Every structure is written in structure tokens, then in C-alpha cells.
Length: 232
Image (tube, rainbow, N blue to C red; front, side, top):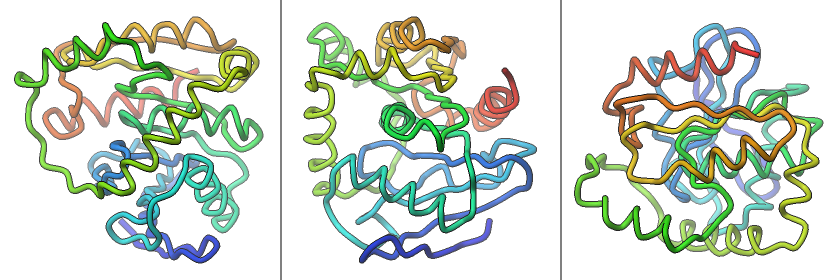
């Protein structure tokens, strides 16, 4: 894994790079978590994978920011790297950011692979199921920054309240593959709805794995994202 520093505006952002082939940018979740997916063994095979650490988190400078700034950071990294288009793989909240990135910049995104995302909703039944299952979820220790988490959470809420949200999604022609973890405590119905909504959507489930299966089942994670990045 090569370590790079990319200047975007006033912030120096850390980006890990590994592999060769078509370009893939991999987004971690949280929001506000460190880049926990930055491992050679987790990278999609046959691709060049980019691992940005969010602004204000870990090795990246800056502080609390909005989803608009997070997407601007991704665009700054893409332009600096000389990448024309890339596949965007996101885990958890990173999958939701990937979807918005595709809607805002379809010219830059070849495809979206959203793994174990939440979807643009704040449904009471979804939250109730999530809270009921928290005690049974495997604990994975991930460093995070509360201020960044809160700011991005507020920005996410503003986004999902936009009157043109669903029209923008239904008009986005970027291929999107929504993947649920079979044993995730997060209900997968929002992902299935998104797959049915976007013009080139697909939904599938990885059976027998929890939300953070990149940690508990790393070989399954690598096979899953590799297949998703190389498939139609």
C-alpha cells in the first residue's frame, strides 16, 4: 500500500493506493471513521484501489464538514490523480456517500458498489430494528472523530429532506449495485428500494455475514467487492 498526500483546498488529505488496473475509490463508513478498509488484502483484485481518509480524521487534516465538502474532496483527489472515471465502493455510510457522489457527479463515476448501507431514509421501523439488534452485533473497534461524525450526520439529514432527492436518484444513469450483509442488524429493504428506483440498479445479499464482514470475513469481503467491480 502506497501512502500519498493530496492537497485539496486548505487540507492535506491522506490517500492509500494499491494494485493495478481500472480505478476504484473505496469509502469507509461512520461517518467520521478512519479509513479502516485500507489493507492490501481487502482491495478488489485486478484494480487500482484508492483509499481516502476523510477530512479531519486520522491522517487527514481539516475538521467537521458537509457531504458537499466530502464529495469535493473526492473530486479533488480524482483530478489530482489523473483519473477520468472510477468505480466508487462504499461500506456502510460510505455507501450512502457513494450514491450521492454518483448523483452529483455522474460524469466521474463509472459505477457504484454500496455495501451494507443505510439508504436515504430515517424510518422508525428501521431504527427500531437496528436498536433491537445492537447487543448481538459483533464489536469491531474503529477510531472515529465525534465532531466529523456529527457534522456529516446533519448534512446527511439535510440531503434526505431535499424535495428533489428521489427525482435525482431516479434520473441517475450510473450503474449501482446494492449489497446487503445477510446477518446485518440493519434492515436491507432501503437498499432493495434503491436498486428498484435507479435506472441501472441491482440488489444482492451476502448470506451469513455481519455488517463489518470486511473484519470478520475478510476473504468474503474481497471476493464480494472484486466480483462487484468486475461484473456488469
